[in-house]
Length: 88
Picture 1: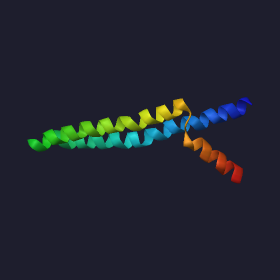
Picture 2 (picture 1 turned 120 degrees about the horizontal axis):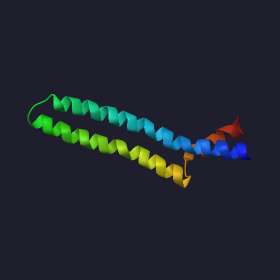
Picture 3 (picture 1 turned 60 degrees about the vertical axis):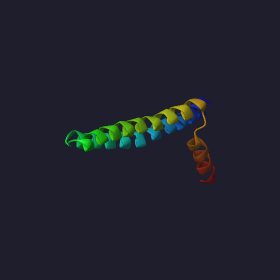
C-alpha cells in the first residue's frame, strides 16, 4: 500500500514539474527581449523593457497553476497514466 501511495504522489508532483517547462521558455524569452531592449535606443528601449516585464509576469503563471493543481490533487496526468497502464 505504501508503494502505491508513493507512486501516486510521484505522479501528482509531475504536474508541477511539467509546469516549469513553459516557465523556463518564457524566462529565456524575457531575457532575450530585455537584452535587445537594453541595447536599443529611444522608444524601442522603453517598449522592450515593458514587453520583457510582461513576459516575466507571464512566466510566473504556469508554476502557480501547476502548484495549485498539485496541492488540490486535480492533476490529469495521473488519470492518463492509469488509463495507459490498464491498456498495456
